[in-house]
Length: 597
Ligand SMILES: Cc1ncc(C[n+]2csc(CCOP(=O)(O)OP(=O)(O)O)c2C)c(N)n1
Ligand SMILES: [Mg+2]
Image (cartoon, rainbow, N blue to C red):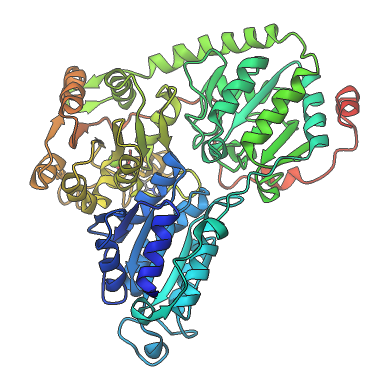
């Protein structure tokens, strides 16, 4: 049979289970777009800015574990997607990104829209640091081989976005082949088990701990290991904290949950991470935001004892020394640990549970005191978060943008079973909130999706609004509007006592300027309301959720609304991390050390 490059790639996409393709064509990728359009097993989502497609693909993967395929045209289109790709890479999310490239004959010769300034085909160079791997097929046959490799790479080990940079002529190049590409023969998912001796040693360490704690990162979500985590924690009574991006990996209404640890964490979780005598870290890097800039006695004590489980050794012992490393798929790791722990008797954890219950009651008072309704035109964000959960008590997808509005969700929204709460903490790029919600809604349309943004992030995302309406996605967008890059405003006031480039007031020339998101949304065909009276919050959410389809709420918000401290910190200039790589002369606890092999 004969197949063109475009047939080859679309056939591989469909056979590998990719079902959504989204992007913006130009001449370098138009034949691919037409081939997608000719199939009814690939859903087409036409966006109005490339970043929308790539942010959507990122969130799509996080909530479903499946790959979406965004595509872009030549370097102007690809460059529009770069931020979102790099952002996904920073958080170990994944996608199969297809970039159309100038035809090979034009590369280095001034082909239309080519980029060859430093070396021929700089587009490939441009993509490199934003993705796990980029391929440049030279022929249609190469395209088949490279696409199969790319699919393997995208989800193996620590996931990451992969790119196929395809020269225009390949789409129409026709080759004679015996049959369609052999996807099942070439695309395999590996679920390696951790070393059995390490599992036993980890179980012994846990069994000797009086205050064991699990710290679950987003790796638990990516490994689809939430069920295994619930089983392990509940069977052995081990309390669970999560990182900000791991929020939702363990239900926060479970008595064993202490909430999110770290910079924007809860008082309970930070007390738990500080006081634990062994922390089982699952799929988390212990990066700066989780570890409070590695400042001693904020999130972790001076020398935390860590069992670190990750799919990749590169994710382990980046910041803190580790007593036992469990390298393997987290689902298998949790299962093996569960079995190993059944053979060793855990000490009585009652005093530890009681200590955490006490911390929980203290934290509850702090959190509730921060949930003030605010006043007309200056609504408290903590109250909005509580109203949101009242309106959506059941499972939701939620995609957060970046700013102070987001921190309230991380700290105070109670994540429940079945929620997917997407927080980008590695790249923390603004622009993911609404575009990511599109991906989440495409991946899990059966539950409502909330897009949670500030007015700054919403301004960056306006191009995504019509797409939500066109594809009738069940997304309720909430804009926390303080007429400023609020987190910048507050930071500058705290450090310099004045602001610059923070308030939307025309640098003082338009003190009353306010972008009307309700009118913008209505112009896109989306029902929208502005909430200025805090007493109307519940009614506004009820109205939005009753629509079932797209809706937007703009909440006129209090600039001074800042989440309370749970003991976490972010001190970017701190030297702390450098102090962690030296050995301590004295063994801290010989009894525990003896248990470690
Ligand atoms: C693409 C991008 N540009 C800049 C930043 C730095 N930054 C982080 S939060 C923020 C302000 C966010 O403002 P807004 O969306 O209104 O949220 P608020 O803090 O007011 O709640 C900025 C500029 C970023 N994270 N991402
Ligand atoms: Mg703002």
